[in-house]
Image 1 (spheres, rainbow, N blue to C red):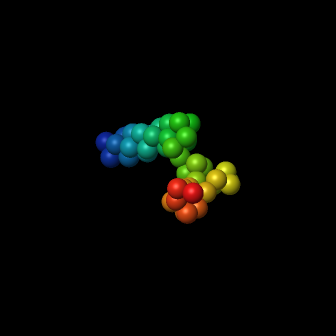
Image 2 (tube, rainbow, N blue to C red):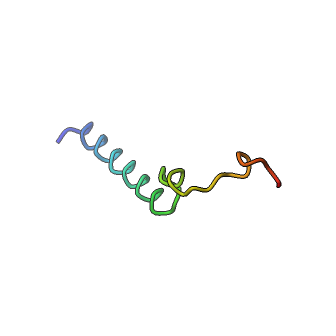
Image 3 (tube, rainbow, N blue to C red):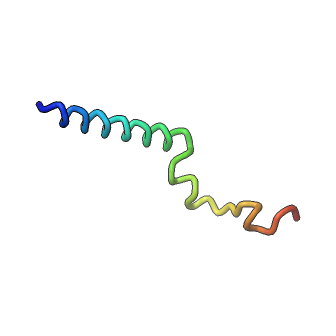
Amino acid sequence: MPRWVKIFLAGGALLLALIVVAVLTGHGPGRHLGHGAVPAAVSGGHG
């Protein structure tokens, strides 16, 4: 297997691992969707 293929696969595996860790720790794209909560900055501030 050529060296560039190994580098490409290693980079892809690293990126996939980072995405999996981000999703499992709650920092993935799903944290912005479907919770129904409105951030304080959007809802008008301090009340």
